[in-house]
Amino acid sequence: METPQYLLGIESKRHEPFCDRKAAKLSQAYDRDVWGSGMAPSTAMRDRLRAAPTTFHHLDAAQLVKHAFGLITEARRSGKKPVLVYLYAAPKDKPPSNQTPN
Image (cartoon, rainbow, N blue to C red; front, side, top):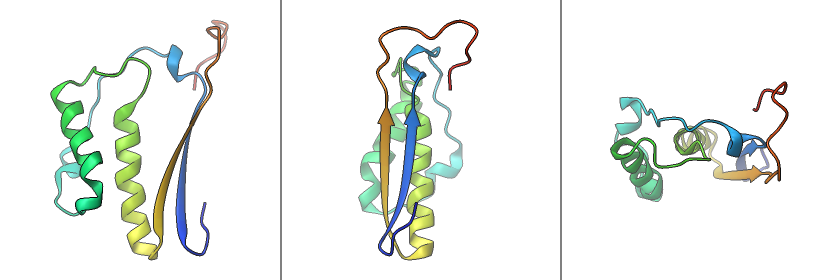
């Protein structure tokens, strides 16, 4: 979403807590020194995920890091401030086996 000042990226998950753990994979493109000091938390998480790719059991942290880098890149092109919002639901039960988690 865009406003006159902001570029918003919204990451939404519903069944991610029930998905199998995924090993984090980040290409070398995320190593480029173009992100700026404001992205230090994301670059630190990138490095942590590479050192321990199965750290997170119920969250695809690598996907969030990739989206943060992509959002900052596009925000710079458009001259807007980036905002990444993570929405999630915390269902009580695992979905029926005939439903594919998102």
